[in-house]
Amino acid sequence: MSTGATWQQVQAELQRRLRDRVWLPGEIIPAEAEIARELGCARTTVNRAMRELAEAGLLERRRRAGTRVVKTPVRRASFDIPIIREEVERRGAHWGYRLLSREKRVPPVAVANRLALPARRRALHIVSLHFADHRPFLIEDRWINLETVPGFEAVDLEQVSANEWLVQNAPYTHGDYGLSAANATAQQAQLLGVEPGAALLIVDRMTANDQQVITSVRLAYAPGHRVQTRL
Image (spheres, helix red, strand yellow):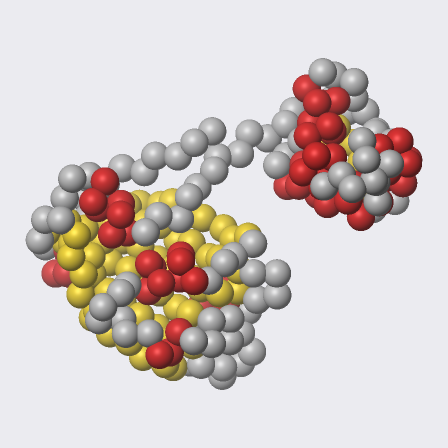
């Protein structure tokens, strides 16, 4: 491997060694410096490749204890962040959208903690309703840290949803994604056209860049929605 090897190339080689059982489950693998010398690349390149494999659940890294092959690798599901308009259109339905509220204010403590905002720092709160063939599809309840997307305040959210603009204009490096079921509140039931207490699928999602959390959103889907992902 040449000195110009990318971390992706190094990662592929390390994955091969794991797949071919060159390194066995539970075994401590060579140090980054040793692998870098063997492959003829920078140690930082090896570090990035190992970090990716650790995040994928294939390696376990412990300070001063070395890097070990995970005995039972965790299989992680991959979740895409869809543009809701395209999600509706893929179902063969006509997408519609209504902005319900847009307000810059101090978020509740739980939201401020999730956004990692200092006390009393304001964020933008947006609530909107998406439709499929003129029927309520989901409620988008979103908080945005405006420091991470300084141009966002000028966006006309009557013309484009926050979801679509952020997917296209706010790159993220990591986040989290939670699925749960909840009974519709009176307000949710009115917006979605269902009975109070109806079972809703809830998606809670946070995305961040290397420095700051960008947005935290809760999507409440009308009954009957199904989520599909890849393994």
